[in-house]
Length: 171
Image (cartoon, rainbow, N blue to C red):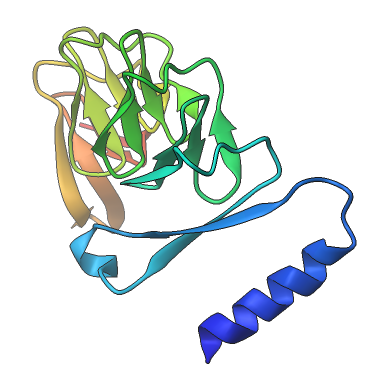
């Protein structure tokens, strides 16, 4: 019933638009959302015959890569694009977080850590932002929050505790 209502609402909403609108439903592949779908609404010139759901919030056709719900990832090569993990992808030239390029990421050594962290041979990142203060050799991320003296944090290195990429306490 919910799917029917959603379809009717989307149909009504977009019926008066002059732009070409396409709605795609991609089944998620993450365990915690295994019975959910990502609804992708696109106003671009989508090639329906090559449109493929990739998982991790991404989909592509022969011309573009898309990120849920309605963004396309600019300047990405759809032929070589692959999902690394939820919200992270890469092509032959770059690494992406959601729809944005991680500017300084080293393609060959990039690895995800506990969300929202990732790293490569040169830097540690929170999402697509480089954490300038992070010590690469001692940085550890945690799944979920840790607490120390009333301070919540989800990562640390030899110098600091971090919450979502921000220093919350120096050691």
